[in-house]
Image 1 (cartoon, helix red, strand yellow):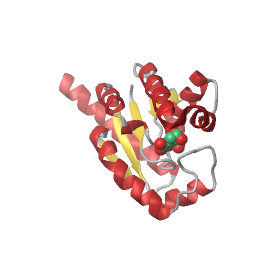
Image 2 (spheres, protein in one colour):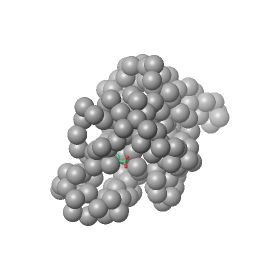
Image 3 (cartoon, protein in one colour):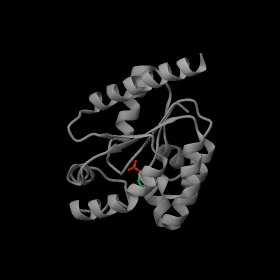
Image 4 (tube, rainbow, N blue to C red):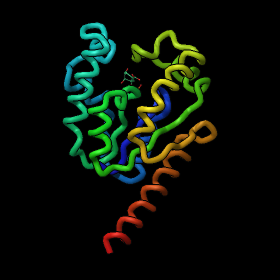
Length: 176
Ligand code: S3P
């Protein structure tokens, strides 16, 4: 795997990964999409039928199934919550970047989008509380964080591409 994007719902993982994939001509997978394809139902349907615990099992199996994927992976906001998922993420050779966005920015985005069972009915302070609970899990498996509040999707993508190129250089040097 070349790159894994992690971060809270609405932090831009999907749009940033798509743009980087286009710019680098590298395949992109969205874990939520993989889950929907493997389960044959939408994420709200999975939550309704199997609850969050059932969703997390399906999510874990989906992550396992793509761990050898050679491209860019956008995870779900809750993927790093499970220790076994964090291990899977850490055991790839991918650069793992967390996209960080302010709770008020996330709140505006979530209000305009649907299809997130855990995103319904949140407000800026409940998002902040959830971010605080989740941060230690994100921190545990990330290589670096990008603060996206002042950046466009294009600027974030370009920044990550520069970081990936620098990493490649360092790898070449250390490999001689
Ligand atoms: C979730 C985030 C969602 C999706 C599911 C659960 C979470 O992905 O996996 O609704 O627990 O934060 P996005 O981060 O792509 O919205």
